[in-house]
Image (tube, rainbow, N blue to C red):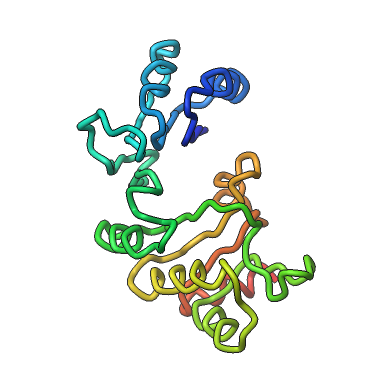
Length: 202
């Protein structure tokens, strides 16, 4: 199943039309800003299922700010980042993920994932357990904006979320590549009891 996810389109309808025509998705998701964009584009593709939630610039609507849907037997919780206050932390997003028993929590950002040394591309870490991630933090390898991200990721896994992924949202099909290929394209944080997955991929 091919899923196309939009967010913060802000009237860039031509880009949305081009993406749909190019990728021919089976499902479209719009995460707000502006919800009008999703509604307008959806009218041009009546056979394409469109799911949408409002963003922080969609104050006119009374639509629910969070929505849980089922796709291919998987439960997916949708919301716009501002609704969870992600600029100041991930506590709200983590709480909701735990509350619905999420199997995966995905953070899209503008960095490829986790590095032992941010200045050394060869130190990229595609998979890591919670304990190993905590060790990197305590040993001072993680700093800057990645520190709170990783702390929140490990907190999510410790509180019941099976796996957390940090992905570069600029990479085309990053979500599909991370979840449905052995190599992946980002960093996956695992429970300690899933350490064998690290060994299988080394």
